Length: 302
Image (cartoon, rainbow, N blue to C red):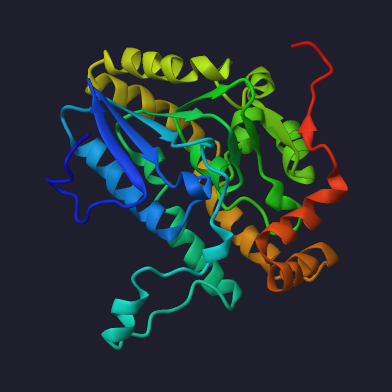
């Protein structure tokens, strides 16, 4: 385990950073919260990604989650958390809130999403290793990565589209095309890792007890390539996607999510009410209950 010296401004509380050969292992480390993305975790992830991109002893990043899940989504219980708020209040500074209006919502998401967007702009390749749940905000993170490998039984999807909004990062169409993007987002259903590999949502899937070794082996193979050459290959492919409108789509996705947050449909209003009266667990149960078994099962051979 690395000491957190060098360019790190603070010791992370929600994340682990380790160098294995020329691979930087970056581990989301809130297992008690299923690695839900709090503001603190995302800001610490920014520091880790920049640290890995800056270091000459790192050729590739392996992004993973501690415990049973890769990432179960955004931390809805602290969606307005501001872990620097006390210092700002003490200094008498009035910062704009990332909620309360369409414009503030767009601004807040653009600021927040700019951090995982670093994965796209980094020169070093980033590989996501998915196990357990990779839901909502977890997919916003994983689908930005250069390659994704998954356990056969991993669950991948964005159930929040049922009542809460739309993904503020839209990489779905670039991975699976329009029909599968709509199939996943219009229902909020999840797909298992083994089937996600069949439709191209992930690169490959293996049994859960093999995913650690499989992902590290892939990362080490990528790390054998000179960083200058790896950066060239990554950036060529990413520029090709930019020519397909990728970055414009990301901005539009955030604006559409902000628009969806203003919705007053029955599902959205019930979720808000359930959160106030019964808490997150009850709200999720009421949102997802009518959908029953939400796992997509492919019927056609691929």
